[in-house]
Length: 360
Ligand code: SF4
Image (cartoon, rainbow, N blue to C red):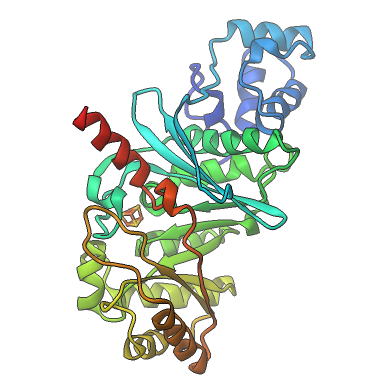
């Protein structure tokens, strides 16, 4: 957020504030700016859930916490499921208006990654995605995105670790909620708090062209992942309806611009659907499409959902696809499907819970 652009002096959720905004709020309320540091540390580094319990605060700050009316929104957990291998945990968090959103915590050797939501529901309508199937409900506020990171860090604190990586691949299209997402990322990458390095943060988009161009124009220091799924307009539109608004040719042009301005690699997501987009010929077309762009393709076998009849590609089809890309000079990784038994595809846990409530 721009300096001097404090949106309101009236009390709200503390998690919506950047460090500079917090300083300005405290100063406007008659405190010294120096009080922002212990408050910020308690909330964003130590994961405090109740400011009344921060007895180590200086007395003026303790009084401010008790009287100023600012609140710390800590969303209650509606569901907490773990995969059978124990490496993936999925949380359904309840927002103040009752909307539920998903946050996934994934463990890898020596590091943890959180996958957070940026909207309740999604307007993009990708046909194989449980969130797309439920439609758009509303944007999340910066503090609601930050709360997911803090929740993940609280879980990890129990084992003495912290989040190292963050991906915005949960419910919603991050670039459709651009300003709130950028505010939230500024907060969670602040070195005095959660301190997730910008290069360890990945924004995943289905191809919102104006958002990609804006990231390049503003030189945002985060990694970019673009979901492709189809190698020509018709193939892509059938899976990603948002392609009608931002056609494939415009998307590729925007990616070319981004990768040359930012001098960064783009991660292209490709959901492998058996018999639909997993042939060697399709891989050749993907390679042609991406030629000249610094690209890495993540091949992700489809996560099954009730609302889409497709199935994941067979292992040998995935390897053939990968080999074809490699022969054309495009590096790729076949991603493990994480947490299938906890409905880890975005929107699946919320959809399952809603279906269960409707059945009962
Ligand atoms: S895949 Fe992402 S962009 Fe597409 S509908 Fe699902 S949440 Fe939205």
